[in-house]
Image (cartoon, rainbow, N blue to C red; front, top):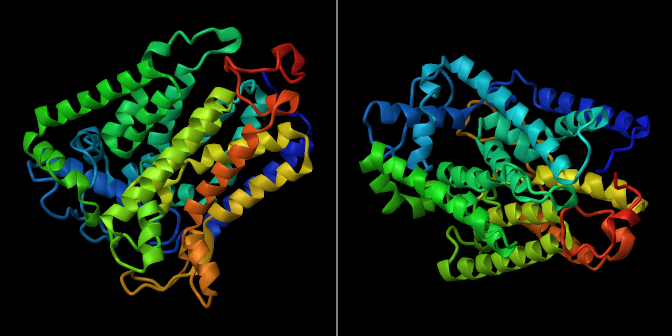
Length: 447
């Protein structure tokens, strides 16, 4: 079992960066700024509430836009989630709106810390005081990543899904000495529930299969089918409407070409300068991305880089999804943890370039973003892909596709990592691989 360095040369700088991240998130723009402050939107959790209220009132979920009296600047919105999610959100209307918003924010922050802890656990770091302190610092630094900041700002469910899939990863792997987890039979339930809440995590069925975990895939599929059956049992008309057509209506969200769509479909539409990507073209490129991502993940898993394999599959899921908002890319959180792990383990200064480069590409940058559809023309915090102004076309084309480019860079660096062998390569691995060519006793960092 690994131990993080106890020196304050690690925790001191991380604590300062964590403090800077919190200040930036609260003050840029100011937390109290109408609509744009970190706690001034919570749009999506209100949509979840509206969906739950529609079920309670026997109103259709998918035949129009939903809206509720809320005292905020909201417009009617479509409910785009499977029927099971509307059942899961039933407790929300029982809470006052301020309590709901505060509770959802607290849940999201708690899950952010938990995801960091789970990522470090997947890398075999001891659950000691230093790990807890470093986890807290990394969680606060990740607040300033655009997918995290926007997830909190909108009251999104992304971190719930991420935690559920990570739980399956931890349950399904072998522990030290090849010992199986006593909860291993539960592995797959998390990703099955995640797919029932929001369909895209079904992509992990392919991940479990290519990494040889057929039982996890079966449990996940069965769990998902149970959520579908529950939807038909409780709200049959909504379930029939969703699964017979609504599920494929990505146009209900926005045009393919909007820069907020950081998926392969968005890339194709922007490159071709069309509103809607040609179906054959984007399906071909999405299939290629899925093949490359899953094949690389399978090789990484076999080589012992299991968390990186899962993270790459999570990023590939966002690549091949018909529409991926920036906040869907929360898999940058375990990727950020991995860059810190590699910097600590590789013992080469060049690896310390990885965390700041990843942060720069995925941070919530503060910029002026006037929009007549919103009540205030303010400085806002949004992803690099939304950067405006007088930018050369080549650079603009790169930054508007920044998250797919991060995925591509991750694939490329993963290929280089797979070429590393011997003790130097073993230092970067997770435990639990049957193909580890370096005996455990030769790794001085093992406990």
